[in-house]
Image 1 (tube, rainbow, N blue to C red):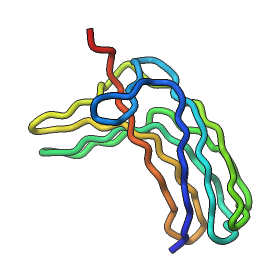
Image 2: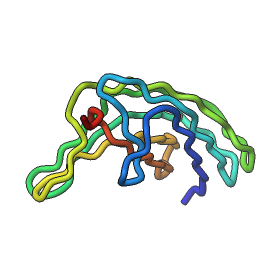
Image 3: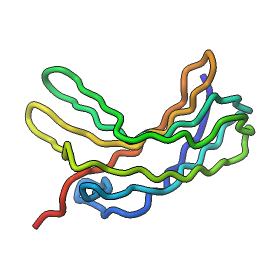
Image 4: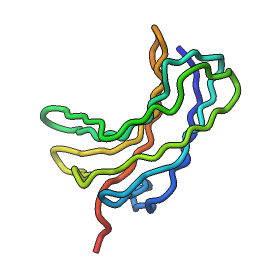
Length: 132
């Protein structure tokens, strides 16, 4: 197992009652993710994705809405590497928590390693209009 520390710095949005950061429909989420591997990593790429997925009863759905490749090459062990990202949020589906189903949004940093389990980190966000 590869040990990697991820630290998120997400800008914009506003804090919600649940503690997650809320973003308006069609807005942009940007920031940085700092990746610090314990050992040198030769990675095929670091992908940063904007995704939503469902939880609850019924079928599970997952969709990647926006994606970027932030880096390809060797990450030096013990040395923090900072990768900026800028992703565009769509108009739907909105974040939702209900009795039967939840729709959850997140930003995912995924380090693609050859022949190994990919280290990942997830940063949850809310996508919904501002309450009136």
